[in-house]
Amino acid sequence: MLTENRYYSYNQGLLPDGCTYCVRGEKLVLFVTGLCPRSCYFCPISDKKYGHDVIYANERKAASTEDIITESRLMQAKGAGITGGDPLMKLERTLKHILELKKTFGPSFHLHLYTSLNFVTEKTLKRLFEAGLDEIRFHFDFDEERFWKNITLAKKFSWKVGAEIPCIPTKVEEMKKVADVIAGYVDFLNLNELERADNEHSHLDEMGFKTIHQYSYATEGSVEAGLALAEYVKEKKYSYSVHLCTAKLKEKVQLRNRMKREAAMVKRSFDKVDDEGILTRGALYLPELAPGFKYREKLESADKEKMTATLQPLLEKIKKESALKDTDFCIDQEKPRILLSEFNARKFKRKFKTSGLLVAIVQEMPTADQLEIEVDFLD
Ligand code: SF4
Image (cartoon, rainbow, N blue to C red; front, side, top):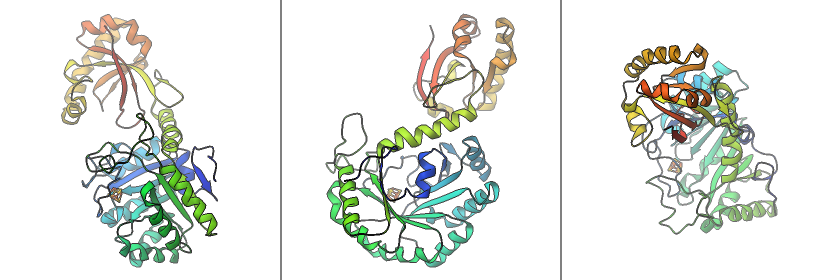
């Protein structure tokens, strides 16, 4: 039986290259489209992405290649995992991004891509390979075997090839079938612990799957199914490596490492950063755009330029009144508000309130959406 490695996952043989970058938090997640030919009952994609032709670079909605490059720079990415939906549903776009990322960051910028087997042809694979893709991973559909034979085409090119499947406790026989079919055609098999998702289109609960405990998204019996499969691959002496990627790895290692990298780049001089990369800062909000009911929706539709212009004279006023330096404050144009240190927010809260601003201490992610974890409005 395999034992847990230092990333809280399990591996038999070497970790795939894409996973090695990923666990260090060095990979940008490039979501090229939410369009997908499949409708898996375990689909983890959020409702705002699934079925919608949208592009995201990590949490940043990307309107242009420049946005993708900016996000890569902000996290000091050493590569990108290209995902969706199915990136092959937008092949020209995917190729364009591969070419641009390689051109901008050089040939060592590691790119891996996830796709179903549905649209795989030799011609498509050749174009992806020639554009510079380093690693390709195929998602097998247990209930649709007619595309499985396409896996044989990928080894014609000198990149790394992998198969990727969810560990579904009731599908161990199907998983074994995939393990047999891929032998000789892949370098690795990546097994994902099955996780419950907060979306409308997955149905794990309705199908009777349970999480390991009430605060976890991991599914009961999934790791065990993965370990049983790893044992099967060993018994069969298949030459490919196996990595069982757990929910704990994604949360405790990969996400945390990425947050730390992003925090180091985006933190202002007055921000406090904890060892998970979470920022603590003071924030002064206009009452019409402060965290609370429907804040995210309001942010989406806000006239940010106008609100920033409203904040500018208030900033000048409070600077004078509190006798602080220019570097002690800044206006955040993405979430129109004034940012400052927790210390100064507490110290001068009365003055700020008399200017009509709401004063809060916020803890938030260092990501492009600066997702709030906790907002404490000061009395
Ligand atoms: S899990 Fe992947 S392949 Fe399945 S529906 Fe969701 S995006 Fe498509």
